[in-house]
Each structure stands twice: as C-alpha cells, then as structure tokens.
Length: 492
Ligand code: GDG
Image 1 (cartoon, rainbow, N blue to C red):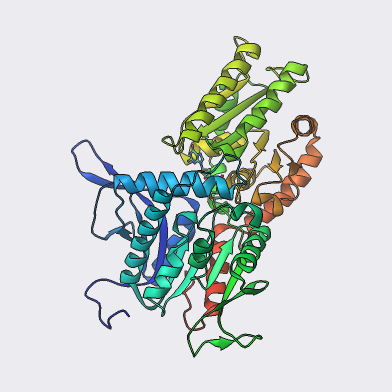
Image 2: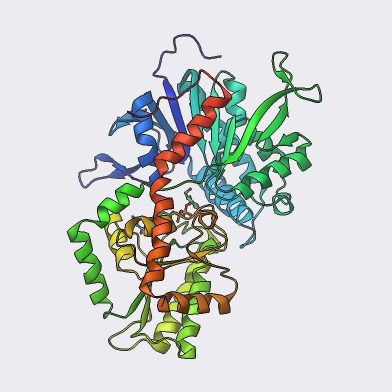
C-alpha cells in the first residue's frame, strides 16, 4: 500500500498513455526543448488535469533517455523510459506488428514473437509501477490504448485503493480473430483490472465481453462483467460467487469541434483554401484523403477507384483531382515500408497515365502539416474520402464535418470506421466494393447543393453536440458511478 505521506509528489488524477503529450527535442544550442503536441486527447484532458491536480505518465518518444518529472504548460509530466530494444520489441513489435494488425481484422498478417510479448509484459509493469508511485490515495487513473492493456491488472495488484479506467482507441476484434493471440487470456485479465473499460463502438464492447465469456468463463450481463475475486468483502453474484463488477461499454471519442470550426472561420485560412484550389489548377471537384500512411486506411482502394474512373472516362483531371495527405507513420515496420512503395508506385502510374501539363490526377504528400493547413485543406475539398478497411473511430471524418460551417461538402465514409455508427448522414461505402465506391464518388460529385446541405447539417449537429470534452466527461462519470466517492472534478 501507498505510505501515508509519500516523499514525492502525488496526484489525484493520472492519465497513462504510451506517448506523452510532449515531444523531446533539442534546439540549435543543444538545449532540451519540450514541444507540446496538441492532439484531441490532450485538448480534452488538459482542463480536467488542471481542475484535479493531474499528471500524465508516458514515454517521451526517444529511446534510452531518463528524465525527472517536470511541469510543462500547466501539465505535470512523468516520463517513463524505454530502451532501444524495448522500442523495437514492445512498441514496434508487439504493439504495432502483433496487436495492431490483429485488432484490425488481420488486414496485414500479425507476427507472433515470444520475445516481443516478454518485452510488452516488462514495459506494462514499468508503466503500472510508475502510476502506483504517483497516484494519490483513492485517486483516479485513466489508462489509454492497446499498448498498455496489462497496466490495469498490475496497477490494481499494487494499489487496490485506486479507481482505474481503460480506453481502447482501436477496434476490439471478434472472438474468432482475437483467439489467434497466444496470450489472449492474459490480455483479457490485464484489461479486467480496470473498473470501466471503454471502447469506440458497441460492437467492440460486445466482442470483448464475448471473448471474456468464452475464454475465461466469467458471467456477463451487458454492460457488466463479473470478475471472480477472493476478497471476502466483495459483493455476491447471483450464482453466489464473490465478484468485482467491471463495466465494458462504448464511449465514442470525438474532437475539439469548436476549436476546428474557429480555425475554419479565420479569413487567412479561408484565403489559404482558395489558394490551394488555384494551385491545383481549379479543378471542378477537389477530392481529399487524409491519413497516417497505414494499411488499415484503405488508401490503395480509394486510388484504385479514382484511377478507374479516369480510365473509364467517367472523370477527367480537369474535372477532379484527388489530394492525398499520407503522413509518415511507423516507418521502421516492414509492412509500412511495403505499403509506402505500393502506394507511391500507384500514384506514379496514375499520374503518368492521366496527368496533363496543367492538371495532376493525384496530388500526393508524404508529410505532416500544421493544423491550420489541414483545416484549409478540409475547406478546399468538395469531397472527403474516408475508406478505412477497419478503424476505431476516424477523427478525420469528424474534423471535416466540424470545419464545414458553410454546410457544404460531401463526406464519403467507410462502414468499417467507428464513425459510421454516428455519422449516418454521410454517404456510407464498403471500400472493398470498388464498383460501389466508384459510383458513390460520382454520386457525391453530382449531388445537388440542397442535398449536400441537408446531409452536412445533420452531420454537424452530431459532431458539434458530441465533442471530445463530452466524451471524457461521460467516461469519468461512468468511473465515478462504479466507485462513489472517487469523483473527478469537472473543469470550471
Ligand atoms: C487512432 C485510431 C481513432 C493526420 N495527418 C496529419 C494530422 N493528422 C491528424 C488528423 C487526426 C489524427 O491525426 C488521426 O486520427 P484518426 O482518428 O484519423 O486515426 P489514427 O491516427 O489511426 O488514431 C482511430 C483515434 O485513435 C482516436 O481515438 O479515431 O480510429 O486508429 O486528428 O487530423 N494532423 C496534422 N498534420 C498532419 O499531417 N496536424
């Protein structure tokens, strides 16, 4: 148990994620500079952190570095070090080459290595130990994502006084696929250390519960899972067993919708959007894709569909340009290197066949851009093309909608993205059906303005009402319901 007065700083609200919300960089004078990386999660949790004296535990993104906890921009940062070997085995290996493909319907074949698993166990223990040190008595700890699925169990063993939440940002696979994992029971037990386990979609939560029923034999009654415990003070289940009740439920994540809309209303960003269209030769229709370069995103499928529309003569490059931002990702994992080669070959072929001196077919960018430029791109795009083969949520779809305060623009959205459960007024597609995808692109191009506006209005209501602050508030309420008295203060 935690001593009454620990000799170091402790916090009432602790977030644990693989990556910290700051990046370790070194400036020209050799000084360490911590750069704030403002993702949606940070935006959502920052106010909660400030209201509760919170801390963020995670890795600083470079191997082999150790740092003392420090404060950055009002957030208490508690770094966890990873060695070069751990980055290779726990992170690039088990997280990104075993769990990631397995949890995304084995689009790419997962690799199973016992050494990677051992590293995953070691690193998860380290994160749990760090959280156990810095969480104050009866505090709340919220663990994020698939890299840290064993942390809830280890943390509960060390600190039974804590209230523990877990949120899975990616899909949870069906039993038939999850069962391939040699360490499947260990992962389930790891997650069940939490009081509340959050998923993106209702289907993810039921896939998880079904795996728990079949592989561990525990009783489940949606949204509850009864985990048998030894503790004499635990409540009795209907079958007369001592159990601890875990909630497994969906909490669809969102974005800082107002923040995106605010950027989109700035005159300089609107001017930039016009400039982007001019730079593309003012085609009638600008189609946009924005993704990390990842095989789950269906980038090849959308290029195939667009290329065929040009080949069939249903479109010309004067009529339509596809802008594809593919931000660099996981560049040391082989499946990602292969994917990049394939995509770049396809772009080269399509442009070689169809581009003219004044119009390109696919404007391809293997870069990350500043947030402002992304918003200008969303504004410049008549059609947003999201063709993920499997995606936990897909925030890009929501960002496009939040930006379109003109109520114009068409969202084409894959049924296999979590966002499709909420964004029913998008044009939903099965990206594997290339013929259907081609027809949907044509339908979007030809859609009358009145219909576009009706659909976009409905989408915007959804995204503006359900922003990321609401998401975190709902999750923290669910945590407080499980352990009354362990409530986290809402931001003022
Ligand atoms: C995981 C799950 C789930 C991309 N390129 C640039 C850039 N981005 C930003 C987008 C968006 C984010 O990155 C990507 O989020 P997604 O949701 O689309 O996808 P993942 O990265 O796979 O995220 C996903 C998410 O977690 C949250 O739970 O929705 O399903 O896979 O915000 O705008 N941002 C900037 N420049 C870029 O070049 N500034």
